[in-house]
Amino acid sequence: MALDLSDCQFFGPALPVPFVRFELEKEFTSRKLLPKKLGNDGEKLRRHWDLYRRHLQELAASGGPLRVRNKVIEPLIDWLGYPKLEAADN
Image (cartoon, rainbow, N blue to C red; front, top):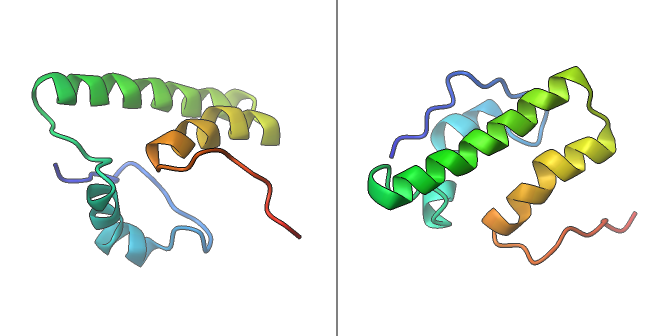
């Protein structure tokens, strides 16, 4: 499944544009974050991302650091294979 990020904008050092354009899809594929587009897997993925997009859209109206953590970061933790979110040492 080709990763289409044409409607996304990236700013800052966390996700530089060259990485997003040329490497991000490979990273997602290697972590099995881009499952099949068809069948049950595809439907499950579509529903999952539709819900995630709605959470992102809600942030445009009102979003602070805690809301971003709860609606954006927390759902990604499990998908990316991390056991939990922890604050980094200073």
